[in-house]
Amino acid sequence: MENESVLSCSVNIEWSNPQGIIQRKLAHKSAFLRLIRNDAREIFIEVTAGKSVPVKLQLKGISVHNKFMSEGKASIKFQEEHCMMFLSNAPPNQLFTFLKTVFVKMTGGKPPPTSHQSLRTQLLSNKPATFEEISPVTTAEMDKAKAKISKGTDTTPSPLSRKRKLSSRPGAKPASSKRLYAASPTPNEPLDIEQKEVLEACLSGRNVFFTGSAGTGKSFLLKRIIGALPPDVTAATASTGVAACHIGGITLHQFAGIGAGEAPLERSVELASRPGAYTVWRKCKHLIIDEISMVDGSYFEKIEAIARKVRRNEQPFGGIQLILCGDFFQLPPVAKGKTPVKFCFETEAWSRCRLSAYELKKVHRQNDDEFIKILNCVRIGQIPEDMATRLAETSRQNIEKNGILATRLCSHTLEANAINEAKLNALPGEKLVFTSEDSHPHLIKQLDQQTSIPHTLELKVGAQVMLLKNINIATGLVNGARGVVKSFQEGVPVVQFRSKEYVAKPERWCVKSATGVMLTRKQVPLKLAWAFSIHKSQGLTLDCVEMSLGKVFEAGQAYVALSRAQSLDTLRVLGFKASQVWANKNVLDFYRSLNLQMEAMRLIPLGRREDKAAVKKSYKPNAKLMSKPLVTIN
Picture 1 (cartoon, helix red, strand yellow):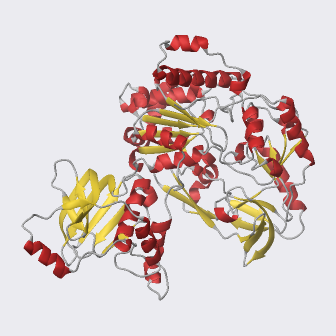
Picture 2 (cartoon, rainbow, N blue to C red):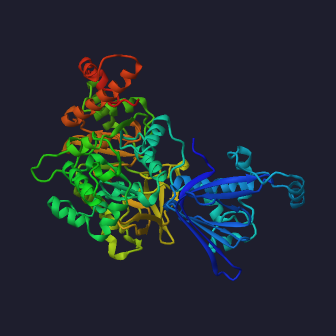
Picture 3 (tube, rainbow, N blue to C red):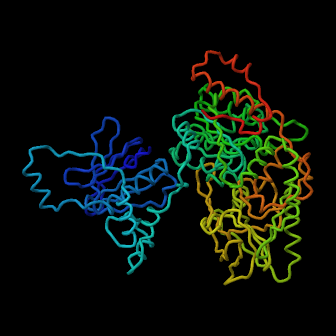
């Protein structure tokens, strides 16, 4: 269980005189912070680092700047002691929990005794002052803290900003305090048992590969893993820009610093040794790669070799911990010319990394057991006749509602773009053009690649659109929700979604460049949605979708398309045939191998004396097994 009252991070402390001149400094690259309480019930932060004498600072009359929690940074100002504490490189989840505990304990706990009582206690006692770690946050303390969010208090952590000035108005709420109490930089829903096991494996320092069918929460878990690791030494990457945006990272190509990787190894090492890329490679301790199925095997081998050479370390990936996530039954790497596709698991580099493998089995995207069984069969390329018939029957379903038409999933991006353009032009009325506000206008192309939101968006009344950001999960305004533009209100589109009407005001997207610079794009969170490409739909949950799978050209493409649907009732498949579903043979063999490894690991500790070879020999996969998840978690 996570300890709410401790934090590991880099710490800088500065003491100044009343005139603001710095008198003393302390800097620790690696420090341990602990919330403690003395006999008088006063709360302190204790800072320890190596053999240094612990520093104790009382939490009284403080203010906290928490705007950059998602980057593992915060600062605490101790007003009475004229002291500033700067925190950096903290695991974002741990930092958020720590600051939230400070807030709750200072506003929701029992008040300390009066100063008279404290002095009397000190005078009558011969014992030296003692400290103890504070107790875990209780429900009562949480309720009290929540009630006090709407009240001004000098112990409320809040940044010195315009928001704080606004919060001083009568009846106003301290905005940053509310953010600290209620919002986390990463998803804060509880993890299930499978997800916890993967998280623990990642935090133990092992190289990890975790997989699972579509909708099992892989990206959700990956965000939690990223939030649990120190940001300064963690590189969160993905095979595509859109996937990287989902986890708040960068593309693997940006990280590697070798472009498309087409240069020979020697030249690629030279590119990776340039100042910017060299610093990134040398600094990295944890490399995360999402959508690993779409990373070309040859490219994976090349960056593994580059890591060893640039870091001058012959361990796999130069000693960097590897955390890989993806489902090889989904989209494969893009084929280059006539060169056959090579998956990462087919390389020597993959074998050298000795990855601990896990599979998430619990599906969160769909609740329909019948649909989940169909998707599991489609995933492995086996579709029984009764399931094929059930999918074919969806062609007669009427899934339109409130003027919202079904989004057509296309196998090719150009086809989807052509449909959207033609449909928009066919609508009467004048187009309204929405242009994004980008923090770095010269990097428009990079922002286009790394975010799903377009730089320029053209809309008309009647345009079919898709929401591209989670606005309100409880009311169904989520990433992938479908709607239709009903009107424009003060230059902003008013959209009728399946659940409710929504005024689509501009939202902000933030992504990082390879050098760590934060890029932002502010835009109306919509995209034309008469049609969408299967490749661009990865990670989305669509509540009104239509598809024709006659033009699928890759193994797993039909599965990716079908698994975007929320349920069978919100899906329409035109002209479905069982021949449109198939899985890559090499992928099937790989997952069988993983299943055998997990089976052997599970059987031997239970007391069987057969060695691994005997277990493998006696184990025969069958059709029933292949209809179940193919990797077993121990």
